[in-house]
Image (cartoon, rainbow, N blue to C red; front, side, top):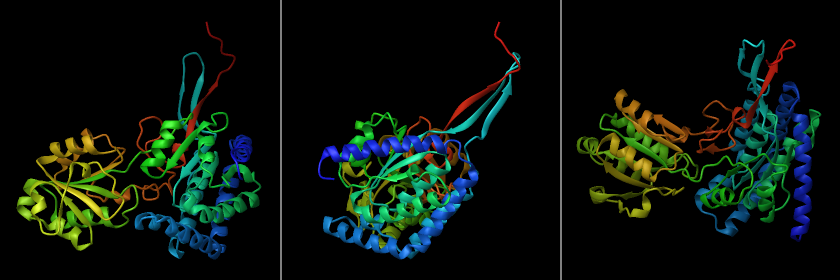
Length: 421
């Protein structure tokens, strides 16, 4: 595709095909969707060497572009991660089909029976960067929830996404479902993104999954509703009543397990009483793991730390870097989170239940955790099989967006000759 006219024609055709496929998926039996997902999982495993070879091409492209180590980690696939893709597809397949579920039901004195039931959104557009596994996660969740999906992967994951998408299409074909139910934009051209954002005739919702630049662009330019989070600025607050060993495990895991995911901790808040009793143990544990600790106030006196600047609070590092600050109790910790957080995921470590309850009650992040690592902010860990992203808005979906969150509802009203007086 050499010019915008070609891209425009292709995107128009993709949108029209998706809209047609959505009409079929809305009433497709659960058994056929299950068969398509199991078939896709089997195809991914059978074609894993093909997928890994495609990923090697993408990794070479990423190195040429100078991607950061965290971004390269997001991009990289190995045998274990391919197995995780297979497991994710199977987990979504095994979930209860949300379409047609009766959310609630009641009778009226007029003789009407009213049911509110789940129904697909229609066509979902997913725009993502780097992570090729999103191709499988988004495709599976949209299919499970009866939606057609248009996938626009990042230029870095172009070949990997294409190889995984081919497996999804194979599953659809073997199950007798429209192959256009899951479509992958076949170009790296940026014009394709702009066209998706404006295609309100065919796309019902856009889900961006990537960095601040991508999500900000989508939120500014989209002419259709958006499920998104701008940044994953996740905090861990270690309360005065925290168990020291537990706090160390959680803090280290929250920062270092995978630094490039949106659930990685970016700021550690320590109650000064805890610090007075236990010293710089948490900071030293992070330093031992090779984390650059940007410390505020007197914490900057700890050997090996770097003095924090104002820009370090409320910053998504996505790297082995963390900002650390002393606070005076849970209220000051919450005030800091409200000011600098992104309402994604925030955690408290404490043995005092009333303090944890206060943290849960008075903060409004999409995910709040007590004595658990922020790295659990993931649809798979929530039992959703996979996620299409983490939504931090307050309309419709919030938190991990799984199959159930990709549905709306309609009212089914039945009477026996009822007329209104």
